[in-house]
Image (cartoon, rainbow, N blue to C red; front, side, top):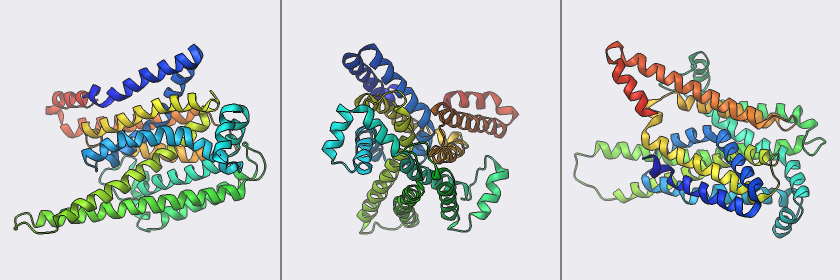
Length: 375
């Protein structure tokens, strides 16, 4: 099970490190290894969130997530995305931007860093919407009940998450964006525009995927009710609808991954400004996150440890706030990564305690075995 799920990640790691050693020597090998660890530490909560969505897809779309999805994640977000950002912000053609990234790495790094306010505002508001939608939704299981119960009651107002996100964007634009650390000067208009873009992206992609998911669930309920009846024509429509739902959920996953990659890409410039070493190191880390996502799905970990999703969403909320704060302030990636790991670790332990308590005194040994096997 472990080798089957992580086999490609192991293979990519060996090949990637070999390429790094051949091209840049021991220094390049160390840089790629550090970047891989950085990506994994920053995006562990991403794997939990992705698993919650991916488990609703069939095996075919899980394979798409690991194949086409990883190509988009590595080459799209870790290699092409920074170049596109430079081309847009510096008003360069794509070819000129690529030449700049290869021939004038220091200037390329400056341009990407200068674009950080827009990147942070877009990704921060997108991730904040994910957290708020989770927080305001009524759930069977509540981890921090003193927070989640009143928030669920407030969540009956459908537009509350949008209102809170816009308020957060407005506060950010009027405070930290007035004198930014990256690029200097007043970036209020840039932050407002990018933040609204992140909000619109969430509402469009998340709304479409949610629509098809709900419609698919309604069709499945209708089929269950008619299961005892003779077969009807038109069953192919449900299959087509499932394809649409999975497709838009796949797009939603890719946008989530993009938002999580923002801080990793920016943070990677503190280690290297070589775009190929950066793509290689972050790509290896992204591959492990994808494999971990599938592992969590196939092991049913989120069903066994019900608070994991809570911890991951709280980590997303923290990351969203950190991204918005980095528009003006320097915050170490170590802090960002540790916050996510601590929150997920606490939610995992709370899940273990809950499982043991529900198992009862007589089933202690059996519960312990189940917990061990779940890890």
